[in-house]
Length: 453
Ligand code: SAH
Ligand code: SF4
Ligand code: F3S
Image (cartoon, rainbow, N blue to C red):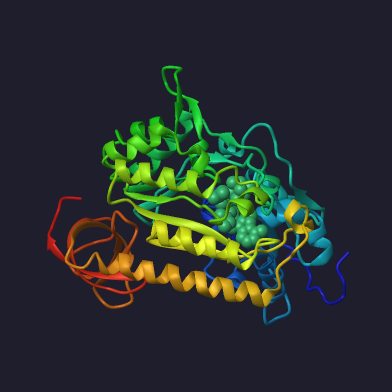
């Protein structure tokens, strides 16, 4: 079925692979699990896409731009000798577009959705035989049981998906369609995975879910627990030093979880709590099921429990029908909260979502202008937040090497990156530093005294 301009498929079973992830942290986590699974089967990772026998594009469907990027990437996977690697499209675009992808881009050999990637090995075999290899099932038995146990990690920080999917159906969002209904993983599965990660050297775990704080499950004694119970249990894992979670939904911010922020030392003082807009009419049209005020009250309570907590949020500008005055309300809520950092986006109409068919779609120039104003304000607060850290003594967990010799980069409890130059320290060390300077995106620190990791 190849068109003439499509280079032939590789005729041998792939021995090397490259995974490129385009999306959110859960998408990155899925990419890591795919890589671990292929590694377990004896395949080895390749540095560059075109060097690999198999390239997995682990895609994101959240905004149009993210999708366009995938198709341009597929086109670029041609080698100088005219051949190309075997190409798999995984992730949320795979789920949303299914076999349409291989119709639009003939060189795609495999299409595999985010709930079916444990079947990737079979799909690779199928594609090798020249058969159609498309799997966008959302099987009842979760993929997690079919994946190999976590292996030793290269970094001291790791993601751990504890729940998937979304039942909230915000009118602009594709996630409920690409990821399916909210499903929590079991208490034991999560604890086992956490312990395996810690045994493999991990010191900080970020619990993941599209609505991570909607997690529920039975504990070892058959009692129902929420995410706060899970966090308290994870805090008992000895060598685990730090716990984070993302993304949380305002409506799932339970009393127990708020209290845990004041009580569980290993739970880091950082909360990503998207509000999307500061205007109640827009929030209603978005089907957010919270108001600006109810959101602010949650923030207030979280700050009471943990006064130094750093806040982060997501914003959409130019939702259909958003007036200038309604946009001003978004600036107002940003002023009120003063976030440590934020993500902000221009509204992108997504096929199949209710908002895509709403009247009053906003012209691109208006969205550009609103986004620029919003980001300028957010940046101002971010700089202020970072500047306030100068002179502070704090622990950082060293995560990776910096650009300069002897330089390492770690994170504060408030998720700020800190550069330190300390040749005697190593990745994975927890060190106490004095913050000496601050920029918009990172801080510089000097070790105060060495702490046992
Ligand atoms: N479950 C999380 C967010 C998942 S998507 C939550 O509800 O908070 C991450 C962010 O992408 C969203 O918070 C939203 O700000 C943005 N987003 C989602 N759909 C979008 C769209 N159609 N256009 C622009 N931004 C969008
Ligand atoms: Fe999307 Fe809303 Fe679900 Fe978040 S809560 S994933 S924005 S539908
Ligand atoms: Fe994108 Fe899917 Fe995550 S659409 S944001 S990769 S859940």
